[in-house]
Amino acid sequence: MVYCVLVILAARSYLREKRFRLESQPPVSVLTPLHGAEAGLEENLRSSFAQRYPQFELLFACRQSDDPASAIVQKLMAEFPHVPARLLVTGEPPYPNAKVFSLHVMQAAAQFELLVMKDSDVRSGPDMLEVIAAEFHDSSVGMVTCPYLAIAARGFWWKLDTLGINTQFLGGVLVARMLEGMKFALGPAIAVRKSILAEMGGIERFNDYLAEDFVIGQTADRLGHRVILSSYRIEHHIGGGSLRSNLQHRLRWVRGTRRSRPIGYVGELFTNPVPLAIALWLWEARLWPVALGAALLRALIAWVTVHRVLRSRITLLDWLCLPLQDILSFVFWVVGFFGNTVVWRGHRYHLGRDGRITLIG
Image (cartoon, rainbow, N blue to C red; front, side, top):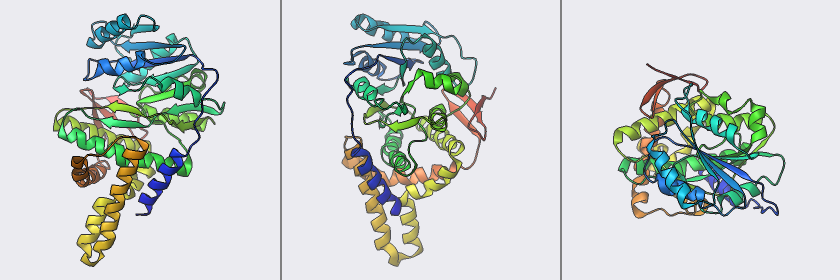
């Protein structure tokens, strides 16, 4: 219950953060790795082409020239001829994290100092670059990472997953930000100065990490550069599909989190009060008011994170599914303490204690 109150206070702190607008807007290079024509890809990429910003370039990278995503990029380049855009063919990645390899190739080709690394399943409004660039007004800011509204177009289990991401996961991010500052980054959209990546040893330094986004933010913080949670909310269109694919995604998430933040992972016990409330009620029935209070606080922070922070809404079905998602999340939290393999884009990897991955087979 104390943790739930912390989430509410953390959301309030985040929403009260001062927002900035720059008089001069630095040029920006937007880097997007591609791999296949996933659902909604054209609209996701179109949101990059449609930015209202005076000077920016778009770079895309795919492994092969016949990748289905390349045809979509070519179509959008014809639709937006005034937007400088390039499609790079990288070939097969020489190390486990293919996304990092694509970013390495695009970073080398980028013209501008300010980079926005944006996943292909991210969709934004036309003012994204304007807001993010303004947040670099302070020279101490080295990295900006965006909160995101997770959206699953189809699949009941994926919709449950996004409910957990938008409420439980985001709540944890906000509390971490309030208590210790942002010492990590969120993968879907990260903005960083090119000189800081060079100071880290280049983005290719993170070529075998599963959660490279977390480690990149952690490294920036250790080098003395501020990492901030952007005021700009993006949409993260994830997954969709079978129960099996969702189970693999959840396993990859919990095992990756355990390796990235071992102590914080143990503390996640307190970020999910519904299973604890049920256990308390079953242990001592007379304590049902306390258990009910914890469940109501959980519902309140779900409303705060989704309605206030992510500026979206929770449907009646979401409310009904919230206890099921919390119980499922608790089960996977327990499962996450065991096992050291993950499945990522159809390949199986061994996950080391330091969060590095090696391809099996």
